[in-house]
Length: 105
Figure 1 (cartoon, rainbow, N blue to C red):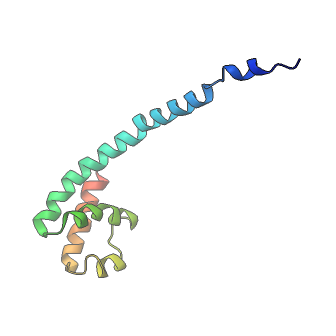
Figure 2: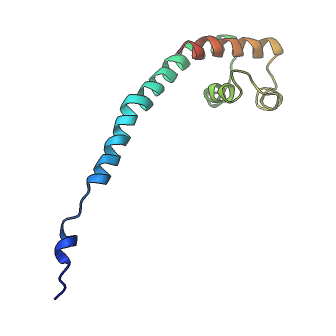
Figure 3: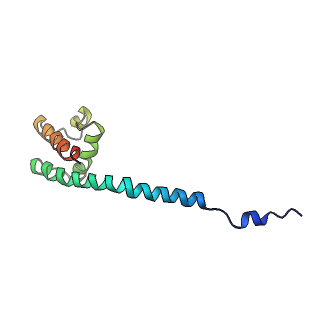
């Protein structure tokens, strides 16, 4: 008789546990410190922008991502669309704030 039930009764979950451990380790060592750096930077950046201009919360929250995607500068498309009401001087000040607050970590 070819009884193979014993081979499947107790599966080895070692690879799954190792993967889960690696994910948790990466979260603790990389993701959480990175998120904390971002939040500290945003907490410095936000009041500077708010003191210059009044803008909706959603728009203000999107600003760091838009600046990050273009290496600290607002792209022409973004300036012409979402931030068309900003003066060139305001754009320059926002970019300077971003670089000061986010590049310093």
